[in-house]
Image (cartoon, rainbow, N blue to C red; front, side):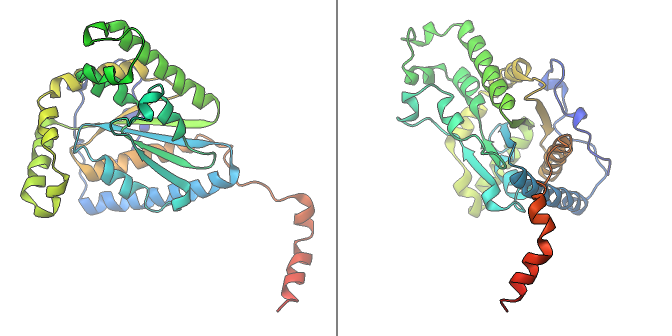
Length: 293
């Protein structure tokens, strides 16, 4: 199987989602993909341990995609070797009453990673320029000045939000948070198959929601707004990666490999050196402890 190069998935120029494949043509078995993933997630786990000791950076992994695109299972499979204390997952659903009393980015600030840790946003601050664009009536719940009806939400409103998101990401990256954003590029036909599977397999029925079908009817709108959001917010400090997601196993490996390859660029992430005074007296300390036997 060919090696993964993050540059092949990174958005560095305006993109059209319709021109990007939702599946890679790879000559590899499921077992081969799993073996590759197993090797990368072990390296990521070791890196996180070093990162925790280094205590200078946090890492924010943002996952966006249509329903059934594989975000939940990717979190389970890619990060399962991590020390549980080193990774925190936040899933952002409809804002609650407390969250609506603050600006739309407030709850995302609260969930940012501590230094030395990974935070995963399963659905992210981008919901505020995706779901709310498809359903602009949701904006009315934010009780914003000058917004009394959907007719008050002009194109400039969305341009402002894109700028605010760029500023948010610039601010956190300048203060030690490494940001990587992944869009799970799923075909409409593959989503149909996965929704059918939820209905056909009794133990998967609980995953199905009638709302999934309603949102599916707005597929073209979502693709339009995803494309606009990605093109407006793909920056060097907070890059987007478009992940072909019709093949879940391959998508997991690609994401894991991109995270690993990008994290390797931070060569300053090293375990801290032992204090010289302690280092000089290691044998003395060992002898002291040995006498306690």
